[in-house]
Image: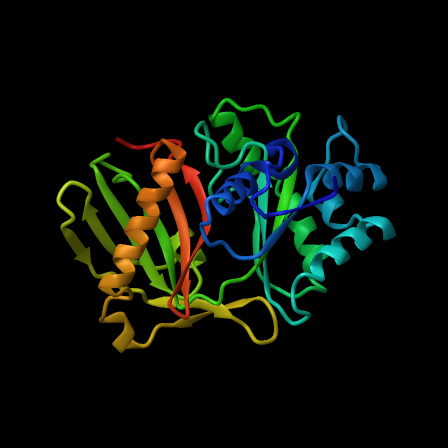
Length: 293
């Protein structure tokens, strides 16, 4: 199939990639994620064939971004987009067959495009696909002992959460392995935490005692939607830098979500989450594939 809805019904990971498969599993367990569909690996390979970019010949990122969607492929994607309001802003994310596994996370290797309009979705999909032949991706795969020759990529098209606060939580301490949930949080969209742009607030919750320790970050800037498209980085007002970005209630909600997802996954995990209008959304869950402890 060319398109799969994330609706909790089983989808083969070979079609939707492991990131999308994990999100779909969360929906099956009634975990709140933003509305989304997946452009499958089937559509990816048809796009390559229609543009004369078939394996095993080498493909460059530029050849992918310069490729054209046939009218039939445009039509199936446009049909899926009708589930969103015409002015919705979207997140377009990679979901490869190697990503977010216990063996390798590929964190930060593949592209994500935020704040995308419906008209911009087609270029954003190609931008994600163009990550596949990037040299830094090949180098990462080589270090992990992974061959990308049979690689493929699905792409998630998802409603963008207009986050007030977002972040990443770990079900065990990512450095020491201690039995503590660690939450990194800051204002706005979470990319500034993932890419290390900000120094976030850090909250640690001991799973045995429930005690909470917290360390205030600088939160020196935050990412928000640009009204004209895409995203923008702004300086955080000083009064917001000097207070914690999460309430005690929100800390406990993220803690409970992280522990629940760890039980589902049956292994240590990290979770990307966002809070908008006091509602907590799960954006991504993956195993902690290369723990430092």
